[in-house]
Length: 448
Image 1 (cartoon, rainbow, N blue to C red):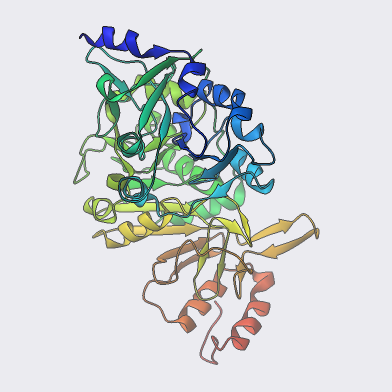
Image 2: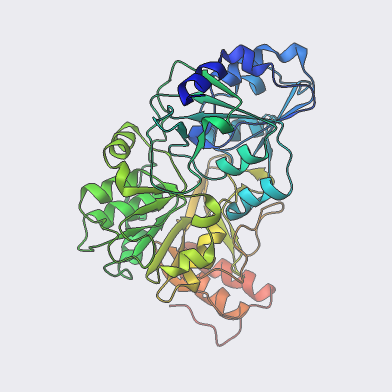
């Protein structure tokens, strides 16, 4: 049977494909741009026929209609690997449950521990060899489809094809049903704005970078600021090895900064596992797909692979840090904000690299809108319920607009001193008093 004959035989409507789902099933919506639209809509229309259908997803940027249709969760229960802004709203309403993970383990979770009855995955169109492409979302897509009892793909002609990489697509023989949707525009992740404070933090990081550095940037205003300053700096021959490809890499590439020629592995290629951005970012991906390499997350986020490039810098945000060096990047007390993601993977891998540096960044203060006053992000203890994303044993370089603190291998007393030295000056005396109460401050401690 030819691939196109097989394709036509498996081509069905979204409504017909959704009939594969039975009560009690685990349905996987995949991650980020792999999130289906038509299949989700068709599943929502079956709401009253079904009960206790468990849905997994993550970083979803478009509404999950099945979840929205069932606020009492009698029919659909949603679980997320990493909360997007939209999923955070669901979580705040009690309609999404976070799944704790270290990102590199996601494929292993599927292959070793999880059930998948039906996989709904958005893909780029099938090529002349019979392969659908996972486009800008590799992550754990192959592992999900391997484990699924039934695999349904939803074709979106606007998803760019990334041909280089591994585990980055499916053959028609691995697919049970094909749905051709209306190919909606790709959802946009608008880069977070940054200002003078973020620029000051970025400048402290860039002072420590060398030509040829392989860079990982997280999401948010601080990594955006670093990317913008590097684009206008004198740094050259940069490499890319990142879990998430974002707009900042497009800007660096257009500035001629990215060559990947000095990387020790995957030389000449920008390695990533998933990507999100604005329209200009998607256009750049389409125009430069041959320079991009889509790899599963258990490769990209493997600390040994990260370290293999030797000259590595990883730049990530956090929300708060305590005086012992425990980093919270994903929750505000008991409220889940995002997820662990790959921050710990890159903190570990970068420090293991021969010339590696791992930067955790935060603005020293924030405005508490409820109380109408400025508060310190550096605290004596993390708030009750806060999740420790980066354990104190793994944190390397901490950066605020007031300076940089190297915490690697330092005692709790040394950590308290170094962390307080980069806190906002208005809060340092109070933090010293807190450190004294905690037994972390001695007469020999100093404030710069």
